[in-house]
Amino acid sequence: MHGYLSRDSVVRIGRHLGLPTSKVYGVATFYNQFRFQPQGRFHIQVCRGTACHVKGSAKVLETVERCLKIRAGETTRDGLFSLEVVACVGACGLSPVISVGGEIFAGVKPEAVKGILDSFRKKASDDDSSDE
Ligand code: FES
Image (cartoon, rainbow, N blue to C red):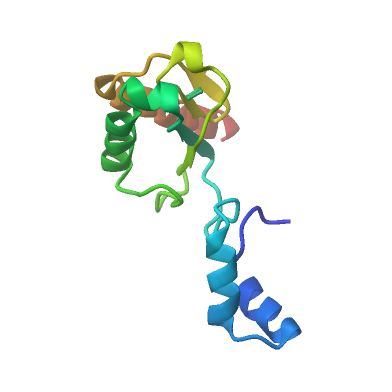
């Protein structure tokens, strides 16, 4: 279990089913539950449900994408962060909401995004240096 569909697994599924790889990709990409890259050490979910949308989640998402230089569905090159857009995390009263590594951040303003991401970079660095 890798948590994502690698290129190799898509090719093998196609071979097993007797279908071209493009057909398998076509079906798999229709479902946004499938990922095609490994998840980052800290998985980010940006809520784009109605309540969060009304409170400015589009700008929050845009800021996360800009800070990490990735789009939703991608993972940073260093493997530290992956990004996903979700419909609602069930905390509408706290909107706009993002989750980073399972930790919920409420009432997130775009200008707070960099600080949140930096705190996780620091956490990763601290964890790595304590392992040495
Ligand atoms: S719409 Fe974002 S938590 Fe419900």
